[in-house]
Image (cartoon, rainbow, N blue to C red; front, side, top):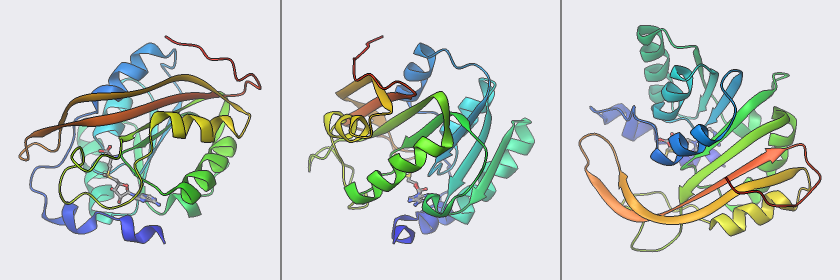
Length: 211
Ligand SMILES: C[S@@+](CC[C@H](N)C(=O)[O-])C[C@H]1O[C@@H](n2cnc3c(N)ncnc32)[C@H](O)[C@@H]1O
C-alpha cells in the first residue's frame, strides 16, 4: 500500500539533500510551548524538519519508507550531534510504547482512508496535551510541482474536520495560504497553496483557539 509513496529513487539520486525546515513548521513551533520532549516526524524525508526540531531541543524519531533518506538523517545527525533516531519503516506498521509531545506529518499526502488510520494511531502515540502538526499542499492542479506523487491534497478544513471527528483533538489553528515554497536546494521554488492544521490531543472540547 504505502510503499508506493516512497521517494527512495529520488533520494538515491539527489545530490542536494533537503535539510531545511518548512517555514510553516518554524512558525507553528514558535507559537507552541513545547521546548523539550519527544517528537515523531512521520515520512521525514531527508530530515529538514527533524534536524530543526532536534536543534530546538527535542528528541526526534524520524520514520520514512526510504532507506537512503533514513541513512542520510542518521549520518547527518551524528555529525551534528543531534538527538535523532531515524528508522526505515512504514508508519502504519510502527508500534511503540513511547509517547510523543509532538507529531509531524509534513507533505506526506495520504488518501483519506489512510489519514483516518493514521489520525487514530496518533491518539495512541501522542501524550495528553501532545500536539499534531499537519502540513501539506492543497490540491490545485497548478499549485503542485510536476512530478509530485498523485495522492490526496486536502484543505485544512477537511483535515481539521477529520481530526475533530475523533473528539479527542482540539484544533488550535487551520490555515490554507498561498506562498513561495522552496523545493530543494538546486530545484528552486514555486508558488502554491499550502495547508496547515495544528491540533492538540486531550481536550474533549471542540472550541477553537487561535494564536
Ligand atoms: C514529499 S516527502 C516529505 C518529506 C518531509 N516530511 C518534508 O516535509 O520535507 C514524503 C515522504 O513520506 C515518506 N512516506 C510516504 N508514506 C509513508 C509511510 N506510510 N510511512 C513512512 N514514510 C512514508 C516518503 O518516503 C517520503 O520521504
